[in-house]
Length: 289
Image (tube, rainbow, N blue to C red; front, side):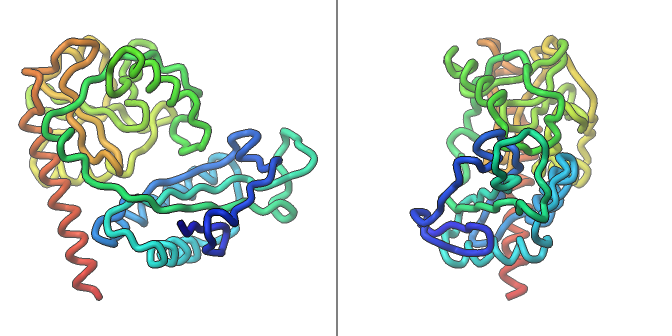
């Protein structure tokens, strides 16, 4: 498999990660995942924008421009060529010796870029029937708005839910629902869509940007405000969103049905609109060629 290593495309067997890479030792890095549909990188600009925001928040100087990174990712996509996939890319703060906690001079220690592309497909079967989730206390740090490679808190939350037999974790901090383990979380009550407002407690999702647009186009009321566990359990519908999962219905939380225990009509409406938006973007990309 070919991967991107800084500015080069190489076989993955050629990649050598230094023992003292700060990503390896400190989790000092950021990442993004872009969904590829029929060879088209969907919402690429928004993902790159978020990468730059994350870099700024951790005071990392990226050693390339947006245009240069985009060109590298597209060269990798052309080399690997998977019509339906996801491209994962991360940037660590590089290798500094000796190991010290303070940030190295970016002029002396350049960040390290890595990217790979793996097959991905729409999770249609799960979207049709929904998934089960469980409440888990949100014990993560207070910079959840940074798309950091330090994901141990997220992983522990997901594992806790899965140990109880659930598919997903619904995170709760101080009584309020924040998000899922790696996705934004939404509920629907009396036809109104609710989700936690952006801020340091949740990741500003790229799919969330699209959901805002779609809700407006569909004439659906969307409120970005906090809600409690009790309010979520009394909701008519619940779903999570991410670039890979798209819109995923959650039909049960802590063994209690949400609504009638089936994907709801608003969730389906948003999902269908999302799929249509993807198809239109892919077609527009084809027309430009």
